[in-house]
Amino acid sequence: MLPSIEWKNSKVYMIDQTLLPFELKHLELDNFRDVATSIKVMNIRGAPAIGVAAAMGMALASIEYKELPKEKFLEKMEEAANIIKSTRPTASNLFWAVNRIWNIVSTYPDHPTIISDLVIEEAKLMAQEDINVNKNIGKHGASLLSNDDVVLTHCNAGSLATVQYGTALAPVRAAIEEGKQIKVIADETRPRLQGARLTAYELQYDKIPVKVISDTSSGLLMYLGLINKVIVGTDRVTSDAVFNKIGTYLVALAAKENNIPFYVAAPTSTLSLNENVRDVTIEQRDSREVSHVLGKLQIVPDGVDCLNYAFDITPFKLVTGIITEDGVFNPKELIKRYK
Ligand code: MRU
Image (cartoon, rainbow, N blue to C red; front, side):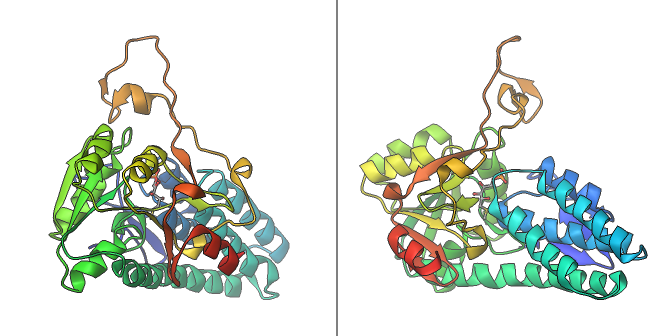
């Protein structure tokens, strides 16, 4: 799979995911404002990919401001950090990544030109780390999958949602690399259709069997015994729940009712265990994403408003296991290990 985002010659290159599956086009960005916009309008999306984009955005800001006197440099970098952090409120990785870069910016005593070099190196390291973390999630998650399993996933927590390899799709990739036959069912994931457009695209690209279903079908498929496991990604894990794409909660309820294991793939950069559900802002996006399919075809009568919560909350009691780069943990074990 192609990397979703790359740093090359002091520029950020990212696949424009709003155009998939119809067109594979890269955006070339040379300033942090454009990176912030690309996160906001979802040219790039998925918690880990957003995190790496944010870090690279900070790297671009450091290049732009590195000739300023130190005090002014710090002021401008803080401004850039705030602009990047204001793009999307729910995914932990965004804040985790900006804070990790800010730590370097605010603590190193050196001249801004040297700090800028350090920031660029850190952003590149974070991109590489993301791939390594996902491969480890894959290795641990593959042990949960048996030959001939059919895995349901929601939204896109694959290669496109990370730098490469994915989180929820990593166990599928790893199990197939181990020689197991695995098939994927992808929820279409209204309203932005990440399942239909992106999960289906990347799995087809990598020749992994996938079928897309409407979001309303997963309960029936579970009832009929056509799904063995559910694996989803996450935007934030608090001390009591998992935040992920809207619709995840209903999938978890149906899985519980049908005794199907419900797993969440979560890099530790997504853990926010000192928070609980009340601390988290669930992003609400433009109602037009619901009233118009792909921003074009209007399906709701004129004058009727829509609600568009982008994420929902799945309480820990519905979660069988959380797969991190270190292993598979039930929620209690996760808290014990990382809090
Ligand atoms: O709105 P999106 O497309 O950014 O939402 C993405 C998801 O909900 C993913 O499941 C989550 O970020 C995990 S990605 C590895």
